[in-house]
Amino acid sequence: MKRIRIRNILSDSNIGRTVTVCGWVRSKRESKGVAFIALNDGSTQDTLQLVVPAEAPSFSTLSGCNTGAAIRAEGVLKESLGKGQRYEVEVSEIEVFGNADSEKYPLQKKGHSLEFLREIGHLRPRTNTFGAVFRVRNVLSHTVHHFFQSRGFIWVHTPIITSSDCEGAGDMFTVTSLDLEKLPAVNSRNIDFSQDFFGRRAYLTVSGQLEAEFLALSLGDVYTFGPTFRAENSNTSRHLSEFWMIEPEMAFADINDDMSLAEDFIHTLCGSVLEKCEAEIAFFEKYYKNTSMNELRVLSEKPFVRLTYSEAIKELEKAKEVFEFPVKWGLDLQSEHERYLTDKVFKGPVIVVDYPKDIKAFYMRQNPDGKTVAAMDVLVPKVGEIIGGSQREERLEVLEVRMKDMGIPLENMQWYLDLRRYGSAPHAGFGLGFERIVQYITGMGNIRDVIPCPRAPQSIRY
RNA sequence: UCCCGGGUAGCUCAGCCGGCAGAGCGGGUGGCUGUUAACCACCAUGUCGGGGGUUCGAAUCCCUCCCCGGGAGCCA
Image 1 (cartoon, chains in turn blue, yellow):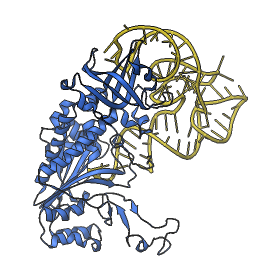
Image 2 (cartoon, protein in one colour):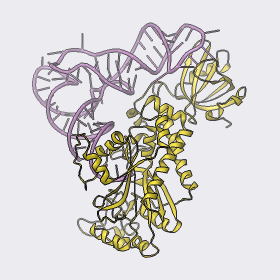
Image 3 (tube, rainbow, N blue to C red):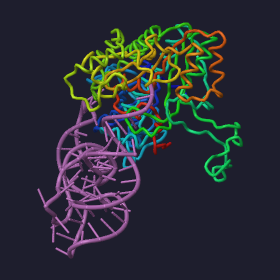
Image 4 (tube, rainbow, N blue to C red):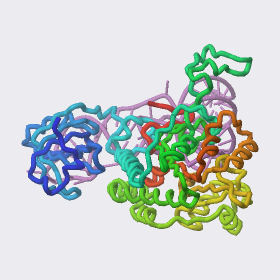
């Protein structure tokens, strides 16, 4: 079928041309002599105004063009006579593919709450809000690849099914082909996973980092971009059970290189949305007020504040705020503490580095002070932690001692230790939750509204 | 998992110190020669989340379960 996307039609050079457009009716306004249809085809935030004069043969077809109907329209693109839009199509022919019964179709020409739209996930992409979210998400996805590719990073595909259960990033989903009605038991409590598909217990990945490390220690600079799973019973506006994560890993790099990459990365992501999604951001700015072109402009340029964990603690200790949780060197920063730093003290993104080793993962490189590790978190206003990264421990003995101290079984991790036995090198990387950056940039308050099919505890529709 | 708040028309919500189930939006019908989530007039809407209890009488009070939202923890 020959059609022009609305995104591509709206320019002076098309004036006077006969065009064919297809899309879904957002609203229809009829009067005796003329009718108007606002048509959207998903390619852009804008609707295209179709004008149907009463004398046009297609005027009688209009009864089938309710809100939600899928139609094709043919006509001449003109400069609009009315105010509110620059162009319009004077329709000569309309074909209705599928009408939408206005007494039943849930999306009508009125505002709907995000909570309600979550219940109709299969229809919500037809709204202004979700059309905008998914277009921004697309631009960000593309920019992720462009950012790394242009810097010579190699996209690697780490496994989704994994046997590593020691990543420490949270509870994991078990992957099994065992008959759940008749589980083979080694004793009354334990299941015999040697009879399972892989001959041992398998999980959905919580992170591709460990695998990305061996790829970095051979290919140089790599990144992953793929689905990640957490079986944590998290019920918040910032957590999903299935989400997309980006994990760059750089050989011959230290924590400072890591922080610079993270900062450049976020600058670039914000910049690309600024450049390519002006209409979408303008929409969010107008209707949700949690993001703006100005904010993004700042985010795409302004250097991030960097401070050590110890400096952050000092900053929090002199705060006049009353915190619910204690502030003390050695304790992890709570959400309220992070928010104080980003929203009140520095009013923008902050990178906190050199955390106490006891609150961080085994693979993070120990600093010469013996107390901290080269770990960094990028914190942003409203959303909180958006990136977590570190320089990795490349010294075999130090890593082994650390793993033993933390009770991590070494037998399944020999491949990981091999990387330190043979040609070990300093390396660093981070993980960025993709939905969190989409959330941050669009200003959407709930992470379930930036992914088509959100998965969360007790929630898996569609 | 914990702490709050909520569930009443298709949607958003009022009614809640017990006594006839309501509004706005959306929808339908009619009107209007260019509208912008059009406008004007009229019309229809209900398992008051489920179950149990108190009472002459429960949307309203009590118990319980389910679901949704906000916050916290875990993290990205």
